[in-house]
Length: 439
Image 1 (cartoon, rainbow, N blue to C red):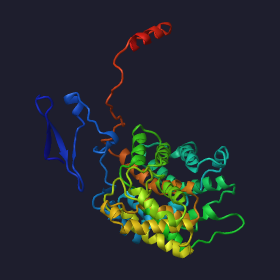
Image 2: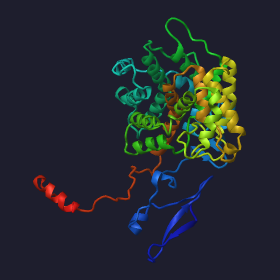
Image 3: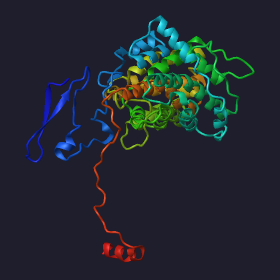
Image 4: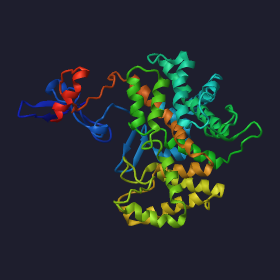
């Protein structure tokens, strides 16, 4: 509800009033939906940095205070005390499950992890060297060709079924993309394993031998999934909502989200961290790189530090920092050259006044890249792992949008600065016309 209004006056003409809607937390919003109809003007907001595109009850972020909450629960509490599937239930349904609900949800996800056998032929149509994200875009969108019984977005039961299928099948599709890229046979899901453990099993087991994974590694993977599960109206989530606003089927919408996530400024950031570490090359060069990073005239940039939203310590990084060191201890990899560089960068960034004053702390991409590297996960799979985790957030946001009576098909406006009306010139006269124009 709103009890306040904002007043806008243009060129001295009579003012118009626009309602203000209060948020339960964070900035309130001015409703400009009737701005064009009342004034003939559009608002101009490149990147939508000051525009709320929807109303949502799922995720809350306060970048200045370093706060991230899912449905009101602090991300650190969820990462420490919950597990990924419990968080999935929370994001989808708004509440943490009781024991009966938790058992049922875990059962439903577990028994939807297999994918249609025909998908093997889709994978084999790609070159072996294809980027796994290219395969994932196609594979996820193609699910709409296999599961016709969950495409009616206006049927609540079908929305439910498609949500369960996507969350469950994403790790299977991701592991298949990895196995295909290295020429190994696909490994089927194992219903006796937990969500995170099952993914690692499909990634690293072979028909020749079982894959035994440390509980600490499983725990770290589960935390990574929780921390990446949702992040409010970011680029990929906005893409999913925009695609969904047209009535597109949910598999196509998630495929669009994966394509958006692929961008190096979004999901590819942890890949960039590893590339940076490889560029540095040796721990002896870290000090030199720190100097270069401080030089505004040097194009070199430290990847994995600071965050566009968080102007304080990234709350997800706080959780991962501990997990990162646990994984390195468990695997005995503190002396691995690339990881030694990362740890030295971390030490300097947390102590150097230049970084501390500017709040350029290591972010979630910095620590996740190190953990994935230590686990033996190839760099090209990092963004795929992000997609596995973020799928539940995309699905929850998509469902919320479909069920919101205020939803309209997305139609951003523009500030047009191109040519005004021009007369068509026949091709044989265009040379002369260009000459006159140049003169």
